[in-house]
Image 1: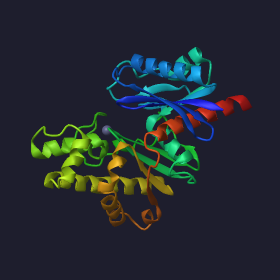
Image 2 (image 1 turned 90 degrees about the vertical axis):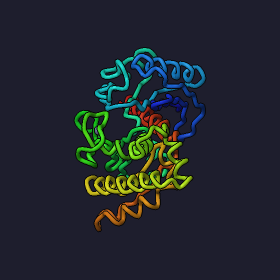
Image 3 (image 1 turned 45 degrees about the vertical axis):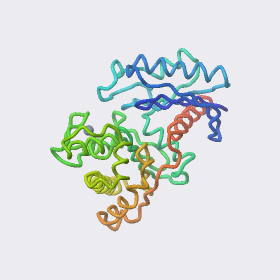
Image 4 (image 1 turned 120 degrees about the horizontal axis):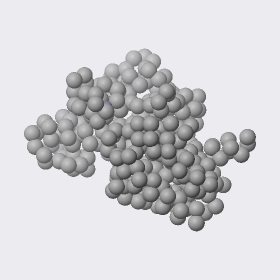
Length: 305
Ligand SMILES: [Zn+2]
């Protein structure tokens, strides 16, 4: 069986045809320039049209931004970057047009499911995922099941308050983890400390790290300490076997992983010492694999009933 998988990133919308063994047969990429509900739906349709023409697609899975009502396949909440996005009935629209089952989850959860299926979290039943990208997301798998919460928000680790009264978050709170642990936060904090506008990307920030820029190194050290504090809290709160760190920022993990894990050991208690820290292994493919996996699961549920 082959499923279509879609991952909605902040800058790109990726699609893929995936088989039941987790092989990616074809990939499609659309630049996410429109940033409206209508643009996103059009991108989903384009991807699905192309994939259904090329493969016998039985179901589609989607990792979408924001909090998702997974039963209805509808957007419950998202921060205000997308116009006309909250309330979007993604599942209903796609099922009506393409006549195949459509499963929708949050993009970070899709990444976590992908890593559990075919990545570094394979073989673990209790996994907490922390996704460090342009924002910070998370997800929790407990005894093999992804936890959902009341409004689709279970595991929104990015909005744990790390520094009360701190940097203003897109969610309206101050001092959220996302404001200290995202790729965006690193270069913005650097600019704030230097009173300049010298950096405009995480890529540039790590250029300064390579140059041994003192302020950049200080920002990175605070990041390692903040990440360790956040992860220790998650370890105590959620009691997983492993904590998986994923997202685009893990591409730079060679610069900060050892320092982060050293702080984790230093800050944690006897209980957290037993919990393993692992890095995501599948990069951008993880969310596609997870999206495919929920599509297969939905197809099987429908056809066994
Ligand atoms: Zn927040």
